[in-house]
Image 1 (cartoon, rainbow, N blue to C red):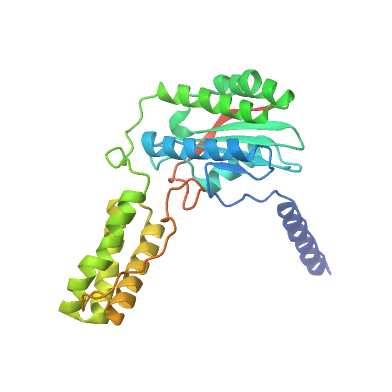
Image 2: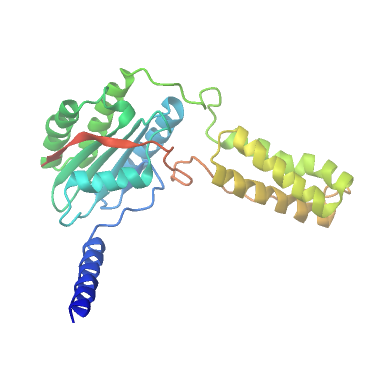
Amino acid sequence: MPDILRKTAFALLMLMSSLLFAVETAVPSLTAPVMDTAQMMSSTERETLNAHLLQYSRDKGSQIVVLTVPSIGSETPFEYSARVMEAWQLGRKDVNDGVLLLLVRDERKTHLAVGRGLEGAIPDVYAKRILQDVLAPKLREGKTDEGIAAAVVQIEKLIAGEKLPETRQTENTDTGGDSFLVLLFVPLIAGSLLVRLFGLFAGSGITGGLTFLAALLFGWSFGIALVVGFIGAMLALFFFSLGAFVSGGGNGGFGGGSPGGWNSSGGGFSGGGGSFGGGGASGSW
């Protein structure tokens, strides 16, 4: 009988634990520097700030992300922000220069989470001032766009005072278009030679591998580079199976669209492997 009671108690404990985890607000997938899931910003300001923070991350290396959520339930802003920072890993690996600005719409709460590498530049007291003196007054006036923009400006000013490693992409300042054009030429030009030398399938496979390596050299993430390499192999296989370039006839017929990676709509945006040590502050409005 005691054994049955112990098993029943354990089952109830596991059920209660699962229910507690179930009520936690889900962490959304990171797709852009501005994650306005609560629709608190105007579409114009959202796009403007998103483009600005994308360029800022390219130029400086540090990542600043704005997240709005409708509610976080019984969690505190710190608890939810910690889960987000752990999931997203904002900032560069070993530099840990990521910042999360969280706004909780229904509870009217805020939190500024600071990566380990920026705790000296943005100490807790400064984080509190940004939330209380810069962000909160604008939110109370209903000027959400202005408040978020002003808070981001202050965060960037504080980061500017911290000596951080330069971004690896400093020498490559294109927005993705130049590198995409180069990557397009790999399967079309190099692929032509490789297919002649090694045959259709082997040549297309080697072309895909070269496209993958080229994407990595341009600073694209491993996952995106893998996709680009696969596309390169498929392009070579498709075009040269038709004889479009091997025989020298016809145009490529490559359609429009934007490359993967960094872009204004946020496709391909992700954290850089940074860590979070609990720095920051919470506020309300």
